[in-house]
Length: 219
Image 1 (cartoon, helix red, strand yellow):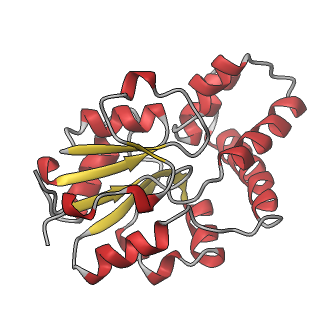
Image 2 (image 1 turned 90 degrees about the vertical axis):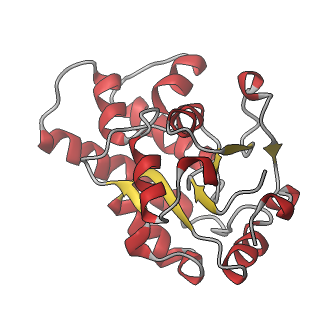
Image 3 (image 1 turned 90 degrees about the horizontal axis):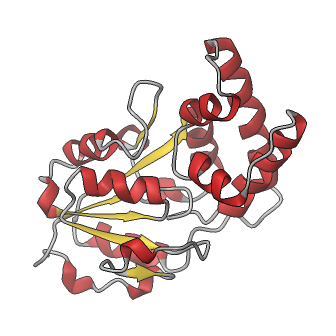
C-alpha cells in the first residue's frame, strides 16, 4: 500500500530537542519544588500541550494568567537552551523533505507546541524552506491535546487527505496514540530519545529519515 500525504509531529521528530525540553522542565520543577519519578515525568509531560501539563503538575485549577505565566517561563528557559545548540534538524530530514516537495506530496506539521515556540522555530531553523507557516497545526489553546485525535484530524484536512492516505511521523507515546486515534493509514515511530516503544513494535521505528522507504509514497 502507498500513501499520498504526510504529517509530522515537530518536537522530538523533526527537531530532536527532547533533552532540551527535559532540562527546561527540570529547572522549572525545581523552582516550584515539584518532584516526580522518571515514569511520572514521562507520563505527565511528553507529547502533551502546556495547558494540560501545568494542570497535571500543580493538581489544581489554574487561571489563564497563571497558565500564561508558566508557559512563558518554561518556554523562555527552553528557547535559551536551544540557542546554545547548533539548532539542526533531525538526521535525514532535509533530504526527505526535498523528496516530498519535489514530488508534490502534501505534508504539514501537527505540533503540541504553542505559537511562542512555532515563531521561534521559524525564526531560528530552516523549516520555512519546506513548510508554510499558515498551514502548520499547533496548540492554539482551542485544539484538544494529544492523545486526542483532533490535531491530526485537522492536519489531515489541511493537506486535503483522508486518514487512510496519510503517514504520520511521531516520537511521543501520546502523539502516537493521537495518530492512531485519528486512524492514520500508517505511523512511523521516530526514536530520537531512546524511549521504550515496546507497545509500538508493529510499526517501523527509525533513527534517521533516510531509513524511510520512498516506495511507500504515491508519486
